[in-house]
Image (cartoon, rainbow, N blue to C red; front, side):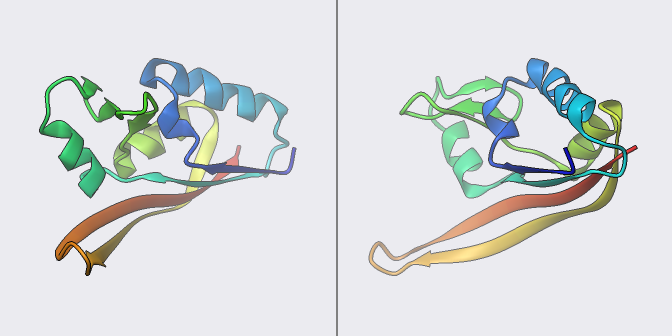
Length: 121
């Protein structure tokens, strides 16, 4: 495989299984192949909102939503180490921050996403 798109995929996987998932990707990817990654960033508004009510937090930075789906919130350092341990080198890791305004309800939402590019070594 030459390229892998991981868009809001890894955050739904239990942290204990993330490394084995990435190792599986690395096993079928050619050397020099790329992973293009986008997922939830640490301290995103949704994470902070889920931290308030009891019962949503599974473990550090890992939460379950009301609909049963799960979300992990990544830091740049954690993401780089995870991919490095699976045999990838980080080319670019950026935290994207955006202020989204809900005009109808009259409040601001501080959203954070992490985008990265990794190369199979």
